[in-house]
Length: 330
Image (cartoon, helix red, strand yellow):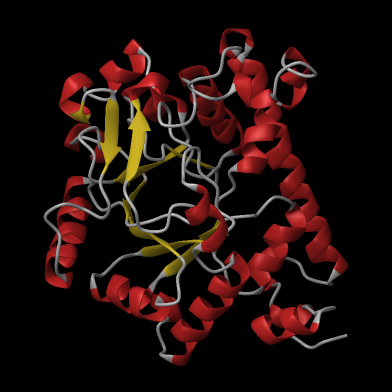
């Protein structure tokens, strides 16, 4: 699945559409992130995941009723559990209209995504929200997304008490477009540690079958993906890898004089040069390549399915990695 790089809050619309198309070609899911979830994304995506957050442009019921998963956003790796301010300078008139215009602004020149979910202060209220969203979405899985912190086990317990179907852990490597440096560099725990602690907690308490576990943050290669599956993840999001895979064949439209992200960002000056269908094809090719390499890795281990790969297939070359994962040191 692709990670939560939202239209308007990070990506321009052609680039977001390319990711939706590319994930559909590959038969995987597209996550709208914190940006507005447009009807056209539902039409383009094979599987559509939307984030439910506290901003005025969070998905309306008409969108929630046709999605494949709803993700209640409580935090992300590079932003901890903080709110997010989006400068009006990065929001063009089309994006502002899609975000609800002035109704989305807390003060002139700024759009804001509050921390947490306004009005949800207790676990009973969170449990009711999960129930309500499940009814609106006609039974779609309800996920809770959280930044991986040192209270990880307590956060997992709260998500399970709220009857979430999926928990999404965003490790410290999880990037974002506009987070302060201190949150990016000094907050959160690494994705690997978060995954291993989460799996250990769930198994020790007999809860592993109660919830699906999705991780994100720093997952870039098929090797990363296979090791995450072996350590107990059910799925993973990718962000940066998808970003560069989508612009792969078009990168020379920007370099050497501009960074390639000028093709992708909502504030990018070169986005008119980006071809969304070509980008979709590049992303689909990347996913196909990842799938084939995952199969090859499973075959190399003598397995007939990637779902049969487990921690016993791993060894660690670093003492600290062995301590974190619990796998033998070579």
